[in-house]
Length: 322
Image (cartoon, rainbow, N blue to C red; front, side):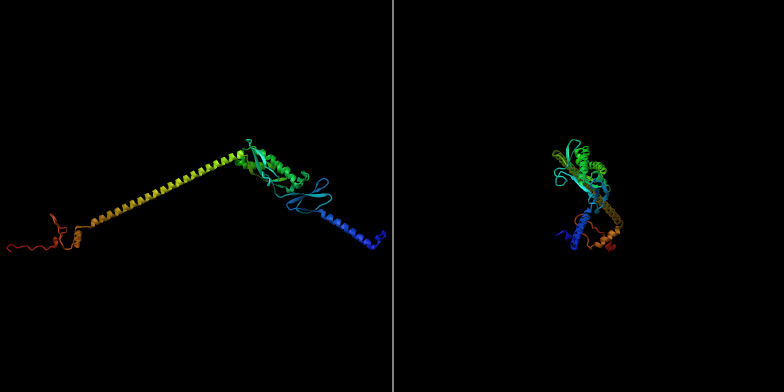
């Protein structure tokens, strides 16, 4: 093909179409490369690639248009993040024993499992980027969350005894550490949501001493409970005995009252009976019950019980001389 061939109209049209197509592809590629997607739960910080100066404020989740040649976007999460430093390597952010080593005020070494929840301040995300030179959140997390926690926790815990750290003052320790860390986090554009001591790991000797103390306390509580139950039982027995005595007393008083009432009634009846029984009445009753036969008595002095003399006709007087 000679140079004159490119001058022919068909060839020129083909070359033009190819060049237009290439330009369109390049422009399309540039257009797509200029769009960035900011993930939900994150904010996007647009910065200049040459000097890392922030060019805009924090962008909300969604699509953002930037100059792909001179700008880039750094994302920071604004949702609550959890950071664990624990003895169990399968749970924390780092492998191996990552618990915090502290000393009590008696000099006893103790390990603490701690959990921190924090959040990037959305309104200060751009300043966070500037302060940390555009470092990702993992670097910020290690420099602030991890380092300040591991330095402040031993300082606060060293004020307390090992038993206080284990139980009685645990809440006070958490509160004091929370206040210290909140101050440090605020200065670095992070919000401390919570700090907690998840578990206390004691040396074997202290653990055995604690177990013995707990057992003694449980035994004392059990004895106290048994004494309380015995006291309640005794009070119940006294109440029951008092109730029975009162019932017996009431029953006796009732029976005595009933006897007295019966006696009075009987006395009144006897009095009425005595007043109503007269000699004629007795004699009348005797006559009603007499069968007409005189009683038969043997022995001296026998006399009939019923006077029937008035029932026998008087003998006629004998006249002299008859």
